[in-house]
Image (cartoon, rainbow, N blue to C red; front, side, top):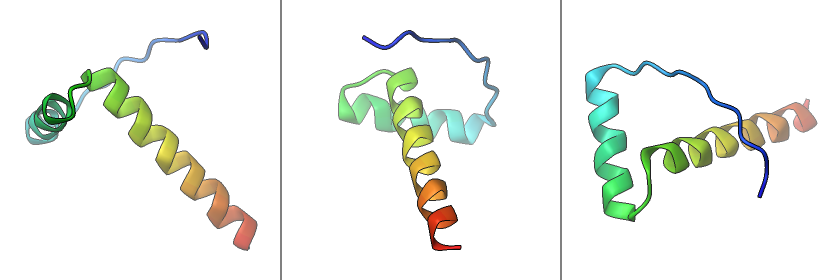
Amino acid sequence: MEKMKSVNLKLPEHLFKEVEKLAKRKGQSKSSLIRFVVAEYLEREKEKQKEI
């Protein structure tokens, strides 16, 4: 398993609740959902840079 580092993240309450609901619906932790979302965003940004 890849070594993990911690980050402290503050979210507005409405985003926190949305993350909580989606994580529960998908049967995963909030942390794993946020990791997935960040990874997807970073990959999209890399792809955009390749287009330039």
